[in-house]
Length: 207
Length: 207
DNA sequence: CCATGTGAATACATTCACAGCA
DNA sequence: TGCTGTGAATGTATTCACATGG
Image (tube, rainbow over all chains, first blue to last red; front, top):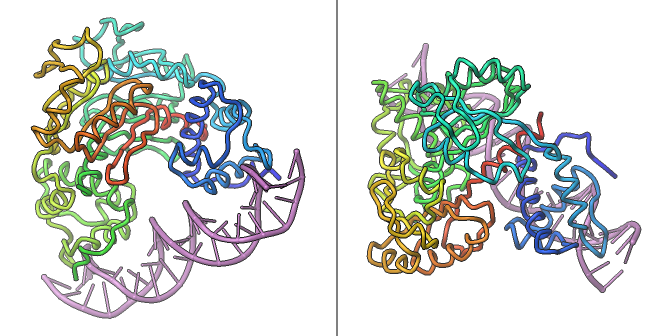
């Protein structure tokens, strides 16, 4: 029995991309079938948790056999809506912006940078990978014209909130935030915050 | 009454760096005192949660007044053991490695890159920021000599596990992993995994 | 048999609400 | 009074354990 229309905890949604990543890896190794047990070992979650997480969305496995990798992979892509490619804008053309622009991992996993913006006049017009860095003044038009819903913030902390306001105003609903500061956005907008130093600090507690 | 010696949930430890970051920000604005209420608004956690989290480690506030920012900041630094600087090695001198090497946010928050390694012969010897890229063969000696406990992995997924094994063998106990793959390490070693695409994918579910 | 899918039980995390103190 | 610190209550998440069906 499919439970697809009931409330799914956010923490479950957060694990789905990890399941998807593991499946893609297995698939690239030529494997056809896996089990909650095997995924458990690869990912470090309990097998019961993996089965329960998946059960929020339907029945993907076969009793006595396990999961058909290709089918489960495709299903997760649809659940996460990454079966088509999401166009993104990148704001910030510093070192981090460069690394993100040159990162090959977006395209293969459902995301594509379509434009790069920066506030620094010196950066405007310079080439960065396949793109030309555009001034912030042009971002509103790009967001509207290309109906952009996803953006990456890679600017200093002091500028991040202003950029976020621009993005929200332009209709963006998902922000990957690399600036080390909490962003304030309306509830309809999702923010995923990446702070490597916070990660390091939470590990040193245990040393 | 201080509870400092009882078990503290990992999820609480994970929030402390965010409290610390907010306090440093307030402090830089010249503020001297804050409250769980104010931190709540800045960070998006409930004030009760902030008070309870802090209560695992002691009593840092004054009833009727709030928290003395400088004192709480110093206390959190000590709890997280970032009151001194942690030396780190960086493995991987690609675009991401470059961005990390040039990132100014480590030094100011208790971390310092002391050496950079890469397996690619073309990269060996090239300058990267203040460092010279060293061959992987030299990493063991560096880890031992400098008693390194913290490392950053910024290599392709296929190489990440091998690098992790080297690091663990060399005595590293905290790994910041940028490779899009799950690492298998002994329980004494902590891994903090950064996967921007997983973050993006978990947001697109809601679009 | 074997591994899924899932209610029930347990464990964990958050919020409530208020006593206690500056 | 105003805000902390914290037991008790509530709400969430994980694990258990087994019926089910290939």
